[in-house]
Length: 154
Image 1 (cartoon, rainbow, N blue to C red):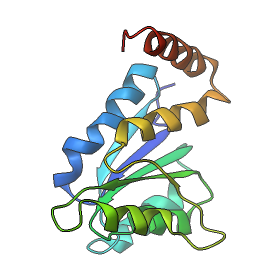
Image 2: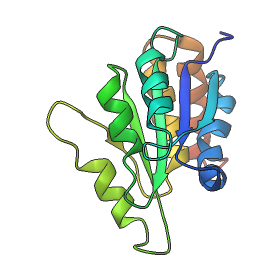
Image 3: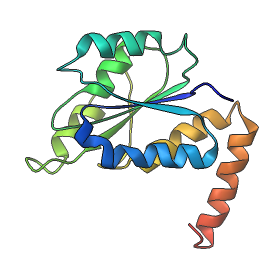
């Protein structure tokens, strides 16, 4: 596997300290990924282009992280049939509750799987678990990770 299977998107460069956890765990599992900065509000055309073309370029899962009441994950989910995982990111204004609600409260027909506020690592694990249905080598890496988790090695 050389081409990215997971797209990791973040609303701004300031989200990188949180979102890098998704990339790191995907790298650990051997799940090829790519990471981009794009905003549903500041660069909506870029978001549309990425989401609409992701499947054709081989992306199988998209992780989106955004803070405040940004709706990056919802915007992406509206443009693709791929699974979308949202990572609400905390801000000083509402402690991430605004981001959580804007990510989890999606209208019927436009689902976004949502992890905890700041839960980018879990988003990466969930993306890898989705991929593991198709890719046995990723499934094996997750199995080993879970075994190590159970005995406190992780």
